[in-house]
Length: 176
Picture 1 (cartoon, rainbow, N blue to C red):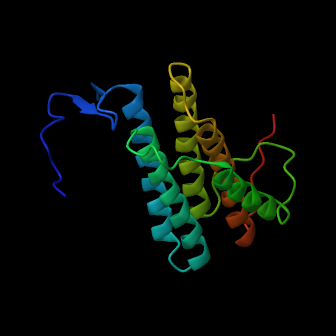
Picture 2: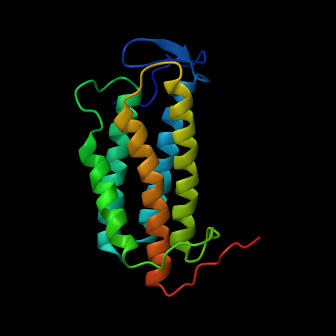
């Protein structure tokens, strides 16, 4: 595969359905946010090499983000997000929450280095969700995709809490 094609040198790029748009178009901002989130997960995996279970679930999320990117770039018309991916996230969140103290206040992002990185990834995921909602006002978006991205940010938040709890790091509570 050739890395450069020169087709985008003028500031335009094409989606899989051959629709060419400016690279500043919301579609490409969203695809960029998916790539950014995937890169964050790659960074987090690099810091969690001693935890194979964590690496495995982060790898699965990265694969799902590639699927999301192909769906949004309109190069994958066969495989779209379904209830299966959403339920998998919910099952993990529910399992982890059983081990965690109930939230009664907002907590500060941070704690362990991995947890802090997960919080950074979560904020990228929230921005991605906001951009997807904006795009959904202009065109039809797979509803399961929107739900998945929303749930993924919850998953990242809960995983950050889980890592802090496993390391014995007390959550810093925000109080007014």
